[in-house]
Image (cartoon, rainbow, N blue to C red; front, side, top):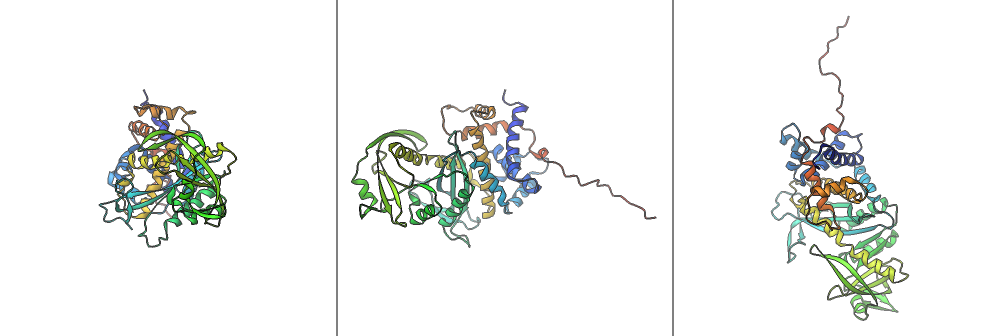
Length: 420
């Protein structure tokens, strides 16, 4: 039976050891807070403070636990925690890592007291209506073996902030943080919402590879003339035949497509890029711009498949919101919201590490089995692992309090010494 003391202990040990590597014990208060938060999020499957506090099984009033967690969330966390986390996640990406960049929204339609609550387009609604909420800029890497998404940068922001400059400022800060951490040259993948000269200039300036989907109004220089990208697209036909697997509305599909490519210049510094045209995925062919070297059709197919891996970041967003209820946070200040977002990112990062060890470690396989999932043939393991962790830790009789050394403050008995 999986509900054994040994397996509950092994799961708890994974969470504690992972957390302690992020927050060094020289700051005991912060280290304990990070460890308890990550453990509580994983055990409860929620970011609501009451559920996290209940999951800690402390022998004190739950109100006191919530107050302590709330106070710690209001303080900025040490930058070295994020650096330690990003470095650890970067180590799972292998050679030639693929980095996916995208924005998501957090909708709070009935929010009244949230700090700097702005207006965003609700991506989950059919009519894309404007609602009260925040934007989330996310940069995700794919692990080397299992191709699971692990977040390298995540930031909640709003245009209503007093010191707010622009969405691009947040994006470039995140890209710089990731670039400074990576030891291998990566390929950054962007959707058409990022088709802007400022991004092309940034990627060339920092000598990074990219794949960017183009808008129809993008102008390209080809054979001595400027053309709209849509004009070039419609004047050609695909010569390279291949099949692609992608995901729509949570379901995987496989389609036969035809691909063409040509060398063009863009308006941003008139740099040379490879324009890749993909026919067969929809009514309008897809246009991709990349500075990756193309020496043959194998390179063209590889670049298109790199772009199609974008659905992984969408799966990541969906998992974050569905399993942990990310949009259901109750804390009000932006500092607390971002700290809670970071702690949730770390918890999901641990799930990513477990997924990556699935073929070499028994614990992830046991957790998946304990989730009692209906499907076995999945390529995204986060739901099963998260359910397995919850089911396993539900049998833990206590939290992680005893995993920290009790500070020896000496005897508390008053001593009186006579002066002779």
